[in-house]
Each structure stands twice: as structure tokens, then as C-alpha cells.
Length: 486
Ligand code: NDP
Image (tube, rainbow, N blue to C red; front, side):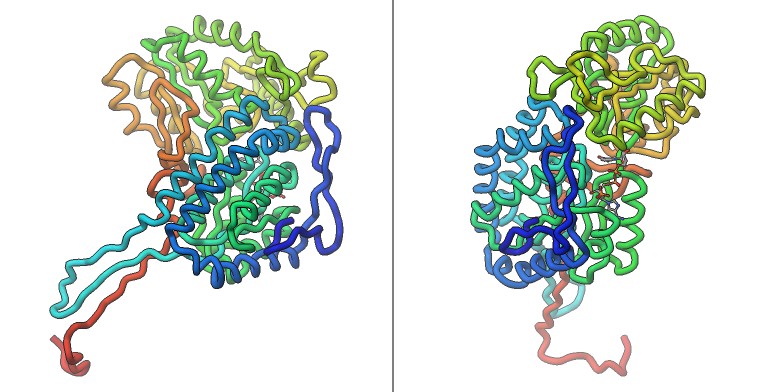
């Protein structure tokens, strides 16, 4: 683990095996950090915040972030390799990710010296008033196993540009890419302690990382129960918190849609990253008049997907990232069948020769689904799509919004009227029209309803890591008599 200026095993020297889901075999071991280790990481981050990091000017913070971006690009192959081994993500996808992720550090590096305060036309005679924006202190970044580098970057670039320090807690299923990434901060010239990484089990480390008085903010991405635990802990000491908690996002296809484009959008929405994506478009809501034709096109296209080695450029879908997740996905598929949903493709463990002993699930589509079925309501976080027909635009909106979640939604239409009207009616943090899964460091991302609170990316995100200070200067030579009102 990276704590302050040193690399450490856990204080009890216990280790957790990291399993490569393609081979279904352990390939690395990571330290099982303890509460003492988490405490040391928070102390190191606090010392850096009060000490050397406070001496680095905003412009120089920006230059360090630029340098980090360069190093990330130079180490792309190595970082991709580690994350592929931990998560089973396609190497091609990871390399694409790593070509893009440095942009976050460049963008927020550019913003670091543009955080300007304001002068207020204050209504008090003889007084001058201004605001400044100040960093908060130590920020805990708790990230899940599906996309460690991306989901950390969406937090880290903004919080560092704002002048905070960080303790990162990856999932025990996928820690290695972030441990390797931590090395690059040292190489880029960041003072020791600005970025720390502790590995181990969430509930155990969380007792420190979400309670410690030096922690001023928690940035969390993960599942509902982890998010609830973190928010409850944050409430005890009134820490600021952002939560990105996944979804059950609708992909709505209208009768006037360009069907070939929509088929690709629906497939990338649910089957990219083997469906293990918070923004997965897991509910296809489709106009009844094109249901059969569209579903057939979908099945034909999905039937061409090759499952196999994530390092092979011919592979279209990798394994599920870890065994507990595989079991959750298979249980939800079985429950859907038991509830009466009609499995028209997939529904089983992947068993081709290329799947070997890997943790594969076939791309799965259920028709005959109603929105009250469990498979349409609960996040599967796997390659499982449900198809629900609608008759009117109003019904499409009703079905789309009839979910606990509100992370993303897409609509496919050639009608300009729908394209203008529908986004206003959809309850989601991100709406795509004739597109799916588009993410940018420039565009705010986050959810409404049970998909969470707070936004990452874009200009707004930097404010999430800053405190506004309000300063009144009295230019009057005297102060009014406090016993005389008016
Ligand atoms: P969790 O929410 O449990 O884990 C996310 C992160 O939070 C991990 O680093 C985890 O550590 C940590 N964590 C868990 N509990 C606490 C706690 N009490 N205090 C501090 N940190 C904590 O997700 P899971 O990995 O268990 O996945 C469960 C489900 O969550 C999935 O099936 C999926 O539906 C959803 N999910 C959503 C994601 C998204 O992008 N929105 C990503 C991943 C999962 P540790 O793993 O060590 O417990």
C-alpha cells in the first residue's frame, strides 16, 4: 500500500488473493490493510495537506497534473494489463480508456489556477466583501471493482486541482492498477502523502476512512448497501459525501428510430464491459409496432458476439469480474425465468472453448417482461437485457421513470419534437439522444433518486471539493453600539 512516502504490507502482514476471472485463478496478492493502516494513510494525507501540498501554488498543482497525465499515457500498456487481469475487461477497451483518462488530469490541471473568488456588491455601508474558495482537506475515494482507474480519475483529478489530498480505497477484487498508478505520483513530483492507497475490505477500513475527523469528504462509487453505509457514517460527523450508485437505465426506442443505429446503441448500452457498468442500459423500452422486428435484429447481432480471452482482439465480451458477481448474475437470471420472463438468447454460463474455466455469462435477453418484475427493477450488473413494449409516448416516459434509480436514459428517434421534449421528462442525471454510453471529462455525470447525489466531471465538479469562505472587511473607523438597534 502507498502510505505517505513508503510502500507497506498490511500491519498484520495478511494478504488477499486477486483472481484473474478469465483463468479463474489467483494471479496476485494484495495487502489486507487494517484500521491502523487506514489511520496512517489518513494521517499522511492530513500532514501533506497541512504541510508541503499547501506550499504548492495552484499553477504548480496544474503543472504536476499535466506531468501525471504524460506519465499515465506512457504507462498505458502496463496499467491496462493490470486492470485486465483483475477485472477481465477487454484489453482494447482498457487501452481506449487509458488514451482518454489523461485528459481528466489535463483538464483539471488547467483549472487549478482559475478558481477565482468574487467581490460582492455588499449592502452594508463602508464594508467590503469577498469570497474565496478553499480546499477541504483529506478526501476519501472509495471505488468498486468494475472500473478502478476511470472511477478514481473522475474524483482524483478534480480534488487534487482544488488543493485537497486523497486516500484511495479500491475494491479488494481489483486493486493492482491503482497501486501501480500511485507510483506515478511520486515520479511526477507530487509531495509524499498527497495520494495514498490502502487496500483491504471495505467495511473494515471504512470504520476509519468514513469516520476519521481529518476526513472532510467522501467520494464513493459502488452498490446501494455500501453507499448507504458510507452516507450513514458521513452523517455522524457531517462530512460532505457524493455517491454514485448505479442504475436501471432505460433505452427507449421509438417507432421512427434509425433501427440499425439503435441496435448498436442498445447492444453497447448493455453488453459493453459485460454489463458491469453503472450506466448500463438494462431496460429496452420499445414501441410495440417495431418490437418483433427490432428484437430479431438484436438477437441476430448479439448472436455474433465472441466470448473469450480479454487480451484477444477478436473477443467482444470478457468474463464477469469476480465469482460473487457471477453468482449474483446467475441468480437473477434464474429468478427472471421463474417469474415467467422469456429468455430468447443466452441465460447460461458461457461454455465455448474460448471461455475455458473463466467466469463467463452468455449475453442474455428477456422478452415478455413487465416493469414490475424483479429483473426489470433490480440492478443485475451483468450482461442481461429486459425488453418492455409501450404504445404511447406518455407510457414510454412512465415506464422509464418507474424505477428507484435515475442515473442515465437514452432515446432513439428521428423526431426533433421528441428529441427536444423527452429529455425534460426523463428522471435521470444524463440523457442521450441517438447515442449511448458517451462520457466526457467536460460533461457532468451523476444520478438522481437512488442513483446517488453529487456530480463528477466538468467545471461544476471542482466546486464539490471546495469550501466557500465569505469575508467581510469593515472600512468604517468605528463599530456601531451593539445596545442601540436600527
Ligand atoms: P460495494 O458497494 O460493496 O463496493 C464498492 C466499494 O465500497 C468497494 O471498494 C468496497 O470495498 C467499499 N465498501 C463497501 N462497504 C463499505 C463500507 N461500509 N465502508 C467503506 N467502504 C465500503 O459493491 P460490491 O463490490 O459489493 O458490488 C455489489 C453491487 O454493487 C454489484 O452487484 C452492483 O450491482 C453494484 N455496483 C455498482 C457499481 C457502480 O459503478 N455504481 C460498481 C460496482 C458494484 P470492498 O469491496 O472491500 O468491500
